[in-house]
Image (spheres, rainbow, N blue to C red):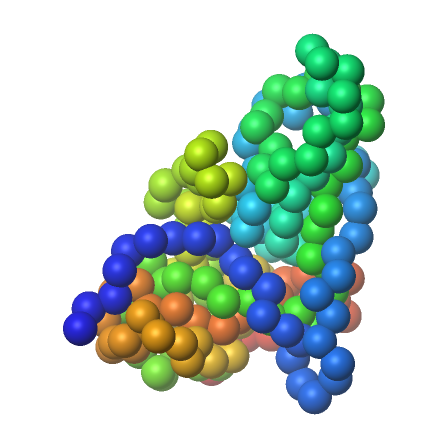
Amino acid sequence: MANTNKAFGFRPVGRVGSTVANQGNTSYSISSNYGTAIFQGDCVTLSGGYVNIATSGPLLGVFVGCQYTDPTTKKTTFKNYYPGSIVASDIVAFVVDDPTSSFVVQCSGIAAVTAVGRNAVIVTSTSGSTTTGISGQQVDVPATGNATYAWKVIGVYNAPGNNDVLSEYAELIVKPNNHLYGASTGTAGV
């Protein structure tokens, strides 16, 4: 049975290794009037101390929501996505930023079991949903990996609905390869 093309961005599933899973997140600022929407599951980075959408590494982590004072209602607003162009001085992004975190993500193309150990790039084939707030990001796993690629594939996600790991849109488990808090640029894929 073929897999469904339904991108959802990056969902935290644990940590690499045998340590206790930490699904916590850290608060960072988003610049007032930042014009790009950031959806739950989108990769983010830092620029000038502020969270920005990431299209490549180095990563800060994965965005999981935000809060800000709504400029119209003057009330504190919590959302699982940042809609963009909010004029407020207190916009806070919640980011899973642990460089040992692991995530499940949909592959945009075919990524066989041989993808394990290879590096992956961020693909934004569709924008996130303003209805659900969920990301449209995926990964692509090129045949050769570059140490600057944002993600490393560490497994195939074993779950119902991830039926055919040899066809398009399989779900993979990845970890940051090129991370702001990592020890280096990353490692080349196998």
